Image (tube, rainbow, N blue to C red; front, side, top):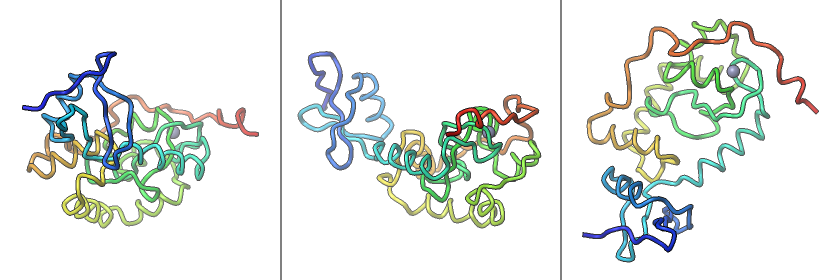
Length: 201
Ligand SMILES: [Zn+2]
């Protein structure tokens, strides 16, 4: 059986689908990736990921350029990438499914659908991506699930997305897709302050 070959610092060399060298990882993490079906080891002990983590960064930069550092939900300063159709529902890391979001919105929404989150918060969506998905939410959910069923593992751009893909394709999606929550998992800030304005040029 193949085993990771630790480099001099005890890490395992990692490459992506295109052979691009990524940050080395620990032997334990490498073994877990192989056990999860997300990577294979070659004869030299190099870990080959079956998904494309570099694409995630590219899309993050594109969304950031489009949205600025502004949360698509509440309008405050936002630095995280948020999937409007959540990953566990098949949502992909693409420009037409992602917005920048503040940590409070991203964390409190968790896996809730856009319509649910807006009902909780009373926010009036102004972001075109959110409005488009909201207007067609049922259809968009169906399309996301169809895409998840047919697209390859290599279309995934993060470990989390790849784990959703694997769960779906092993008829185990319930493991990563909890029932839609009835209420926010964490406290939602009551009063959105225009914090962002202090950072505007
Ligand atoms: Zn927000």
